[in-house]
Amino acid sequence: MSDLVTIVEVGPRDGLQNEKNIIPSAQKIKLIEKLASCGIKRIEVTSFVSPKWVPQLADAAEVMSGVDRLEGVSYSVLAPNLKGAQLAVDSKADEIAIFTSASEGFCQRNISCSIRESIDRFKPVIELSKEFDISVRGYVSCITDCPYDGAVESKQVGKVVGSLVELGCREISLGDTIGAATANGVSAVLDVVLDLVPAEKLAGHYHNTNGQALENIKVSLSRGLRVFDSAVAGLGGCPYAPGAQGNVATEDIVRLLHAEGFNTGVDLQRLISKVVPFAQTLKN
Ligand code: HMG
Ligand code: MG
Image (cartoon, rainbow, N blue to C red; front, side):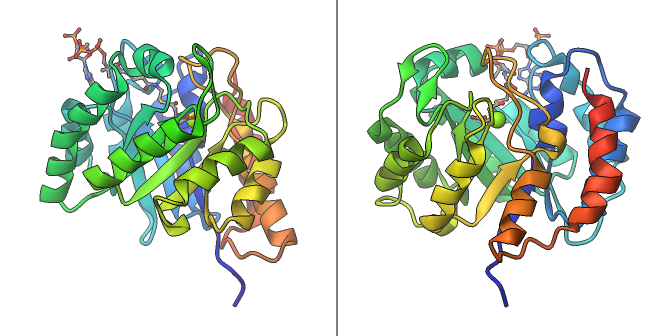
């Protein structure tokens, strides 16, 4: 059997959070159901964050309750604090993703607290998730570059990854938030992080602003990572990271992985014919 790589589809969350015109919940639900019908097993549906901060995702509860869920698919959500985690539990999320940054500037602009404070805020989130047996994923943004602080030191990434693992995250997603990383930069981060955490616990989350995401994925694959985040049709960006473009397109990473002999379980033809054109209609 060929080597399995898992795609975490983040288009409905990381993609749509950045669209200015409010997209009707029914359209979001349709997108999520179409993605699941292509064999994608992990879908990040939405975020339970302040609607003042991310108005596009103010309908998080409606979207979560509206999706006709497929057996075997994990539907996850982002939560920045206990309030978000409680809403996530109410929505029957399969996974909660907490998110912080390796740089102070982005952490402050994105979640309005320091990195240290963010870790403290996550403690009750972890407690609640344990109570409901929900797994927790941790994001570390700005692994090489921050839109506010500039270059980020790999050892700082290691420190934050270590804190999230210690808290109880089952997986850490390494975010190149503004798509500024190069393969050498990602490699330097992995040199540090893989000393602390095995590759099985890591995911790559690469935005494609400079067209480097596939190179960053290739270097991550060579270092043993087998989980990657992507957004269908390359949707997205981050409203608090000026200039950030979408994540690597799901169809591009799946094409690359299949060409390299990896198995993803994703029906690429169906994705391209049924989902990519629909996702493109959602771009403002
Ligand atoms: P704050 O203003 O400091 O918080 O924001 P607050 O506690 O003062 O609350 C302000 C208001 O929000 C209050 O309502 C709260 O009740 C409400 P009001 O009394 O004014 O009516 N509130 C909430 N409502 C719903 N759900 C919640 C929630 N929490 C508070 N969970 C806060 C702090 C963290 C809430 C805010 O900064 C926030 O929501 N930030 C989210 C920003 C965001 O979603 N960014 C994009 C996702 S991160 C990303 O894209 C990067 C990633 O893709 C990886 C990568 O690429 O690197 C993951
Ligand atoms: Mg992102």
